[in-house]
Image 1 (cartoon, one colour):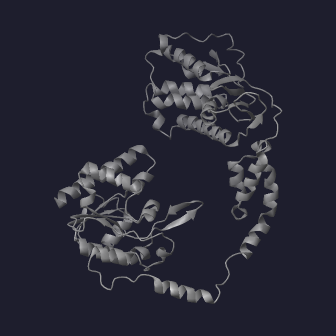
Image 2 (cartoon, helix red, strand yellow):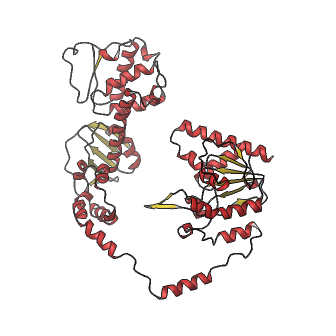
Length: 479
C-alpha cells in the first residue's frame, strides 16, 4: 500500500505529480491511500513511500483536455475519497478515451456529482460574499469579507473577485484560506478566524432596495432556501428583514388584490369608440403585398394582437422562387417588425450563406404574424401558437403564397409544417422531403430556434448540417 499525503495548498499540483508517478509505475488504484484536507492517516500504510515516476514527467500518460479542469474542481471537494476517485479515473482513461462522455458510468457520475457540488458552492460564494469597507489613508479603498464555504474553493474563486474588484484592495477570509488582493496583486494566505468587521454605511440602502423588490405574491420558501441557504443568512445584511416580510406577505397580497382594476367608468366606452374610429382602415381589396402588409398590421383575427407589439409580415423579393416560412416572430422580431432578425435569424442567415441562397432574393415570413409569449420578470418567453391561432393566421400566409407564387416553399419547424400542409405529424421523419400541397411543393426542415435549444453540441451540429443540406436542396429545386 502506498501512502500519498496531499498538502492543504497547491492541492492540484501535488495530486498531479503523485498521480503521474504512481500511474507511470503501474500502481493500481486499490494500492494507494490518499490523505489530505480532513482525511485521516492510514496506520499500516504510513511508512510506505510513494513510488518515484517510472518515466520522468509522466511520459506516456494522456488525458482528455477536460480532465484537468474537472480534476481541479473535484479535488476542492471535502470528500476524502475524491483524490482516489480521480486516480482511478486517470487509470481508466488510458484505455477508455471516451469515458468522460459516458454519464451512465458510475465512476464518471460520482465524479461529476462532486464537481457539480463545488461549482454550486463557488456560485454561492460569488453571490453571498459581502464586503465591509476598512479605514485607510491610501489612495485605494480597502474592503474585507468573511465567508464559510462548504468546500475548498477560495483559490478557485479568487481570480473571479480579482477581475470584478480590480480597482480596490480587498481580502476574503475563510476557515481554510484567505484571498488577499493588494495593489493589483492576488495572493493566498492561511485561513483565519472570523474578523471583527465594521458596519457598512451602504447596507441600509441595500436593505431598503431588497425590501422594495420583494414580491409577496411570489413566495416559494423551498426555492428561496435553496437559492439562499440559511447558513449564509447571518452574514447578509438583507436577511434580517426576511422574517418580517414573510409575516406581512399575506396582508400585502390581500391589499394588492383589493387594488386590482375596477370596472371602467361609463365615459371609457365613448373614448374607445373614438379611438377605434380614428384607426386607419384596412385596404378594401388586397391587390399587392403592400396592401396585404397594411391590412395585416390591423389584424384582429385572433387574440394575439392584444399583447404583441405589432404584426410582422413577410419581406423579401415579391417574385421570389423560394419562400421560407418560420413559426412566429420572436422577441427581437416583434420589436423590429421584421422576420428572422434575432438569434434564430442569425442561424438561418449563416446556413443560407453557406448554401448559396440569397436572402434578398427569397421571401421570408412566418406562419403566425403576432408574437405569442408569456411574461417572466423582465423577459418575454416564447409560447407555441395553438392550432386555432395557426388557422386564423393561415389566411395571411395564403395571401402571401397567392401574391408571391414561389416555385418552392420551405417550412421550418412543426408550426410552419402545420400551416403549410395541414398535417400535425412531427417533422422528424418528414424533414428533407418535398410534399405536394394545393399551394405548391413544400420542403420541411428544422427551425433555427430548435437548433439553438439542442443542449448537446454534437446533436446541434448535426441539425445545423441538416438545415444546410435542406437549403442546398431548395436552391437546386428553384434553380
